[in-house]
Image (cartoon, rainbow, N blue to C red; front, side, top):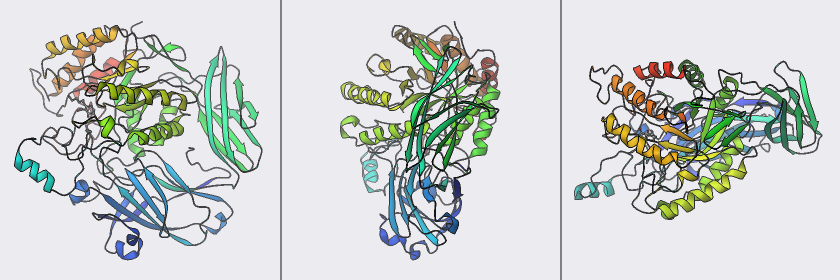
Length: 598
Ligand code: E8X
């Protein structure tokens, strides 16, 4: 799915701003579309989560539908154009009504969907209503604990009064994941226009042959017209061209896309079909897993970076381009080179920034928290088809980004309670994911601190990605025992013969809490925790990456284990460094991006 762009033949009308808004507990129906439903409604900002924009606790505790409304008028001169209404993300499920008619339903809160509205009249006012449902359960991704307890919840199962109260209370969301269930129209809403005959999709697959860069292209179009493609270098000079809807372009003496501080060289593909035109930045680079190495352009890459979140004060999970720009600057400040889009696809704009800034991305689906029940979730859950759909849509959206080097099918699913059904599920998902990417990127998933000897799936991934909390959740505070346990497990992975990325490790840390003798939650402990564990990773050549959890503090559901959210950030939520941030800046600026531990 192409990202909207303004050019000689395409336009964009942005529908962001103040919309009418109201929460409602009743199951919505057609009736709400009349103006009475919105009488007395509030105003809310779009794009952004609705949860933190008001002072009413209901905005955070709400479980169910929320309704947005605004009107718009298309200029008459657009009558001859194709018009498309695009939502970059509505979390988690959406229903869209235009002039009172249901025109779209969408499941999934982190990927775009669009509706062709060419049929509606330009030059007239139209009524747009969006219903957004924030409920999470065993059929949604991310997953909610139906009737159970929230992640790190503490309901004591055998207390009769608690059991009764849980049955008595009104519906609540119980995330089986450790981030606040922000919801609403989280990303931009736009109407974009194209000619009636248009370019619908483009796939660009780069490869390298000696000094030549090769781009295999496939262009999907609609309507009559000649199709062509040109490749321009960064000076705007044409270096290759082709015609037809598929083919191969050769660029002599190609400039490759390298992660920062290398040069992330970008070409511009100019695609034409009939009157339509579309420009797409592309980078020539290769990605390959070979033995215990992860190669970019044939060189062994070392991942220095983070698990992140899309999370900030007031915006919640809402699109915040300024914050994205700041985070890119901080990633450079750290001397980092990568991050994982934990635990859901991020807004397209940060991938575009990473293409330009040379930052490597592990692109993850919203499949987090699969489990959290005493039953076999792979049998009782109803999320399977949606998971396949999400993977297909994620790859369709992000397949052309040189910054994206690997797909993560999910985070910390239950892989050991029912090993056979878990294996069947994830193995078949892995097999159907590989062919979806024309560039054939590596595929993984991220596994939790679990019994690695019983987990038969992680070892089958292209890259082993493990979240490990020795010294925090396990052997808390005892770093000597943590080192011992960690090495026992690393001995296990040593024999598997695959690259291993430590995709999460971390310690909750209160900024300003200092101790001469480091104990948990102090800044000194966080720094000592990382330095102690990094020294062990440095001894293992098959450990090809370190992603502390987390880049910054972030908001979570309230609970006995979270004091103002998750505090494992190297930075505070408003991006101020803790001691460990300075430690990593020094460490990562002394570690090469390629050939480390060679
Ligand atoms: C944590 C992280 C959580 O924030 C992240 O979304 C997934 C968790 C640690 C593993 N991984 O809690 O800070 C939980 C292990 C429980 C024993």
